[in-house]
Image (cartoon, rainbow, N blue to C red; front, side):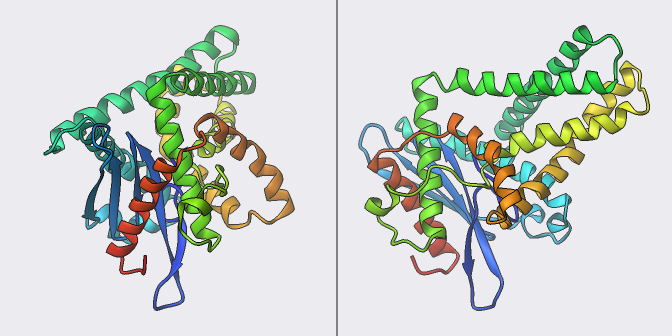
Length: 311
């Protein structure tokens, strides 16, 4: 997965008839890649049985995508999370079915809602509940600065351990390869290279706006935010409430941080700050084969055509 400029993962800037650039985002799915622009999206998936590349395209017309409120600083980070949960989950479900050979795939809102609810609940339990509980056992004084630091370290360990664990399975390794294909395609396009597999192969696996690096920023920001909460010496009910209410605040601030660093990546200080952000991407990207690069390129070209750009 990767991060946006306005609301998505990796972003590719493109100038329209005016002077303002707009950006595409990307995300790896099962045997494929999702690319999106400000008004449309395209998912390209390769069928396992025939090798055929299948496309799913659509328009983004909901208030989350076009409403001005959701483009405001700090708020746009929340829009990004909501978008990735909905469009990303829908694309994952669709890609899994198509890659397995299903001819017609219908995805209802109820199915998406249930899947998202389960994913959110599991994430809160694993990355909010367990670190809080672990810090409670390790540090006597709940809510202290030491408590917050231990909680953050446990959260980092859980994230890294989780990524290493799922990355050891064959199917997820292939998703990580498609993640690499997405990065290479975006890096090549942003560099102005000719969009052909031979050139994409030489592009970098890493991208400063990747969603994996976003996790690093989230952990750092959470320590700072919860450190401020610790000054009030909260009890356990207040601690739990602060963690739940802090999620949207941390997401909004973290997005603005990653956005700033991506826009000023040539700055020497920012380069140092980007080191851990880029390093974590080694956990979720793998070198793709040429077939995967073809799929990522097909998704990008499809969404560019839909946006009215020359492919």
